[in-house]
Each structure stands twice: as C-alpha cells, then as structure tokens.
Amino acid sequence: MPVPTELLKTLLLKQKQQTITEQEMVLLRLYLATAGAEAALDAVDFSDMPEAGGQPHTPADVRYQRILQAIDQPAEARSPWRKWIIRAAAAVFLTAGSAALLHYLLPPSATPVQMLTYRTGNGEIKAITLPDSSRVWLNARSVLHYPATFNTPQRQVTLEQGQAFFDVAHDLQHPFIVSSGQGVQTTVLGTSFTVRVDSNTANIQVAVKTGKVSVKQASHPVAVLMPGEQVDYDVQQSRAAVSKTDTAAISQWTSGKIVFTQASFAAIAATMQQLYGLQVIAGNTSIPRNRYSLTIRYDADPVKLLEVISVINGNRCEWKNTTHTIAVLH
Image 1 (cartoon, helix red, strand yellow):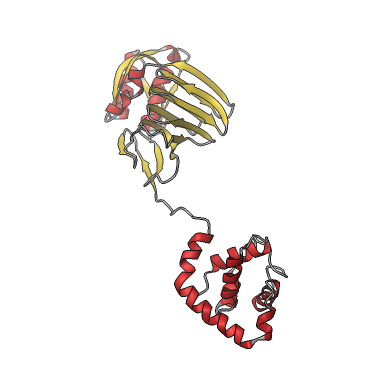
Image 2: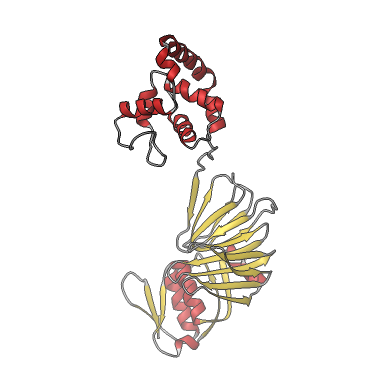
C-alpha cells in the first residue's frame, strides 16, 4: 500500500516541533521503513514546514537519509533483522490501520460544497428556495451565489449585484448572512428584508419588513434595523443614512409590478436602470422636478414604457443611439 503523503508530512512536522507522541513516532518509523517511503518523501511539499537537516531542494535520497538520522534509529543499523521486521509490521499496519489514523491525526476538512449561481435578465424575477427552506425573490439584473447545502455554523449567501427579498427560515443556532461585497454583511436569525447592491456606485440598501437585522462592514457596525427601517450605505465613504420606509412596499416588486405615487424623476430613472439596464437622463433643468404616478409592470416593453413616462408630464423621449441604451427626456 502506498505511503499516505499527507499523514507522512503531518508526522514529520510533529516530530520537528517535538509534539509527536510515542505512538505517532512508532508510526513514523514504520512508514519510513516501507519501500515507498523515499518516493513519498519526494512528493511531500516542504515549503511550509521545517525540513529535517536540509533545504527544500535537497535531492530526495539525501533528504530521506537525513530524516532517518533525525528520528534516530541506531538499532536498525546494528541489526539487519530489525529492519526486515519493521517493514513486515509496516505492511500489515498500513493495510489495517492507516486510514483510521489518518482521519484521527489530520485536521478534518469540510467536503467541498457546490456553489450555485442564479442570474436574472432584463425585467425578470426569479423565486428561489434555499437549502434551509428560506425563500429568495431575485429582482431583475441581479446575481446571487449560495451553497447547495448549508454545512457550516452560518448560512451564508452572496448578493453580487441587484436586489433580493429574503424570507429567512428561523434558526437561532445558525445565523443567516447576506454578503454584499466590500465586506458588508447583513445578519439575521429569521426575518424578511431586502438587500439592494449597486456595484457601480458602491451603494448598498437594506430594508426590513419583519424581524431585526444587523448590518456591518467587516467588524464595524453600520446599523441595526427594525421593521419599517432602511439604511442606505455608501461603502466608499463609510457613510450610512437610516430612514423610515413603508413595509408593504418593501416586497411589492416580487409580484412583478411596482406602483409609483408621485415618484421623483430620480426614482423612475433608477428603476429603469435596474429593471432594463436603460439609462434615463434629464435633458433640461425642469425634468428633475417632475413627479410620476403609474404602475410599471416587469413584462412591459421598456421602449414603449418610456414613451408613456414622457407623456405624463408632457415631455418627449429622445434616444441617444440606435441600441436604445440611453434615453433623454426633454
């Protein structure tokens, strides 16, 4: 049976640090007595551990001899029969017990968990059920990453871009964390809230519908929010603005429509950018003072929708280029 290089490296490191037990030293000697020990040593990466008696680039055969000398085996040199007995014992022991001891000695490593990614396109909403039965509604032009299973003390997902409404399954033992880039994290135990990430402006908005959430950047508190509260956080300036918000409106968009009542031009422009990737620009100084009352449905044709928006205040829409990415209202 081949010598397990991971276990061999662990034992050598323990021997150099003088933390090796008597039983582990016996096992190390057994491994080094096997026919494949020299080849196994050649496969060991010594760059992150002290090497016995030489440099990492020492030839394998020289390194092997120096390590043998370092663990002190004078009895073998005096008795040729002893080396044969150790090798025979090693063959039996490796076959019967090395796997169990490898599991015991090496620190447990979590099995790699598959990461899933969901993206939404223009005017698209996607409902997702997470492994813990929490529900997520992903708004248009958004990107969410999450593990196929939650196997750590924390349930963590990443909203890379866009907006998502979370209805989190209650679990006191496993906090739910939404990472939003730039080290910003929203932590809950069980509640419903939205997170919106604008990667272009480095602005993050969190609004709470039910429950209580904590927002931090790295280890620095940003805000603790209760129902009907939201925070707009400028990541670059480390500046937070907490305000009141309508709880009914927080998740309204998950139905596929948004109802505006006397909304500002800035709010309409931001919505068109978020839903369809269209940049809407004010063509004169009066446009930003306009107010708009209308319902925007996600399945609407954005070009026709902008024509309707223009007519509300007697304006006209002019497209800057043929790809319809920039519209100017006059």
